[in-house]
Amino acid sequence: EAGVVQSPRYKIIEKKQPVAFWCNPISGHNTLYWYRQNLGQGPELLIRYENEEAVDDSQLPKDRFSAERLKGVDSTLKIQPAELGDSAVYLCASSFDRGNTEAFFGQGTRLTVV
Amino acid sequence: AQTVTQSQPEMSVQEAETVTLSCTYDTSENNYYLFWYKQPPSRQMILVIRQEAYKQQNATENRFSVNFQKAAKSFSLKISDSQLGDTAMYFCAFMKLTSGTYKYIFGTGTRLKVLA
Image (tube, rainbow over all chains, first blue to last red; front, side, top):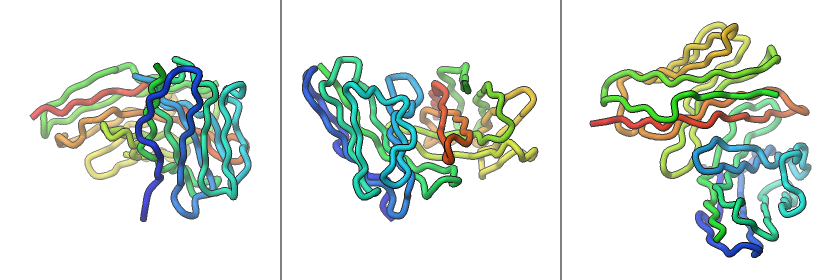
């Protein structure tokens, strides 16, 4: 069974440019998470979906970040415009449903903003 | 708010030896879960072990075991018979029920190096 798939694995962009990350969760997983991991830190939640509904986006900087999960399957996280401080690894994770505590993570996208 | 603290930024251990990674957390919740995740250079977070707060018995998974002290809010990970493949970042994580689902709060990690 395929795990959580993320693309691209690496992205280098200039500041003020837009960027998008894609995530395909494990088949049948209803809960999807986007985390940001700064260098030397643990991951921090940006947004959590239950199917297509964003149930927790309190940590998402809504002035420049947006996310969608159409049809409750794969998801896209976008930054527009990117800032130097957005350089980080963006991790996607999924779990079967609410009440299932184990989340499976993708390999992340390392974003470098120059 | 919940916090998770890992006070050891880096540790090293000789192959086949035992090492213990520390984690403390702060919460007013009574029901929660605690986890140790491993993050190798590939960046993919892999679940190592999980502990339910209502269980007094410490969780064990092969060479990995935890020492869960609920009153002290301590959750350490012991790795026995360390292997070169155990070299990775290790993150302690706390999870409580939030709005009908679960939200991880991670510590800052401990970089473990297993020496040949």
